[in-house]
Length: 453
Image (cartoon, rainbow, N blue to C red; front, side, top):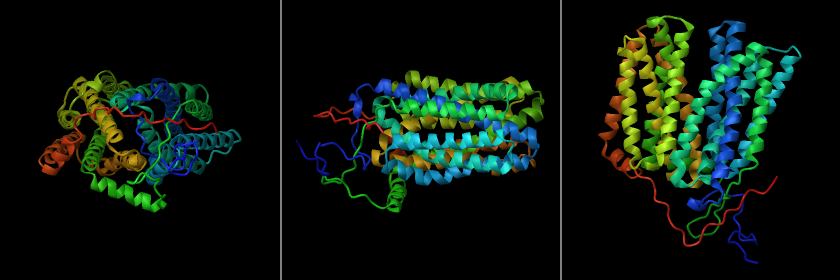
């Protein structure tokens, strides 16, 4: 019987520490695990999106108040941004699989409680706000853990492809969820939507229990198990890592600016459709469908040919610049169908930018830092869109939407050009432009699945 450096007699990594064993391309049964994982997350995502649409429509119909809708967005998004700071650290300190299961179960519990209260006749607005805030809080724990767990079960060479598939799934849900939510809400009521969400969350948890996740262990340079730092030490280390890692810093900067400047078109295009082309419902619906179809097409393209992309940074930079140009075109367009097609192309560009960006982060960032890095990515994704509306929304009541779209697109294109003019940015991005060639380990790393709980 051998003794491990951390004192365990079986030679296996200690589950109390996350990280640094790279599963590599030799992960046995990874296709099965990824298929189960993505299926479970898709089912869970569908339930969450049903609640998102149903709550928005319910509050609109019941209150007809813009302030109520604004508060629902605040309670539904800001807690996730705040909790992502902590969730990222927890994803590096604890079992990511158990964090996802715990967060999904908590969301199902609070949703079930809200459904039962509304069935009993208690339907005060503050209850919905509390439920939205709690759901958002646990989403801030779940999301970094999901993103950090993906490279544990996916070979590095397949990350861009799997991220493309995941983007396609999310875009497909954007097409399906509104239709399904409308059917359930119109046929029954919002409580029925809550019950569907509870069922989908439990199905997602059940499927995740079937996924085998390799255990990772953090070591110091000498090879002994590293002493666990304090929580805030881990948090500070994550901040220092992002600031000191040029490639990660620039990639996250590009992602953040793109989210802010693409957020404006995605929110303001319905307003331009109404003001310029008419307020018929089918026109607004068509606009949303074209954007979602573009994102779906981009995801499918990454799923099909993503593994053959040899210069990922060129793809990211080119599609970001293209999104800026097409956004300028939105503002200049006077034909409705040209406007819709340009929205579709922006959706394609955004997915072709985001899928390789996520793959690079999952591949480049050391396993023990991924939870914290994706925690900050979660903050960017959660805050950027509302932030863009805080700036562009009030401006849309003072100047035309066309002008705002042209300005947003021009700023995004100019930002890409500015980044490329910085020598340190070019060097940092060039270092991560090509996929890492899978190494042939002398001895395959032992993969130890999570024990049944």
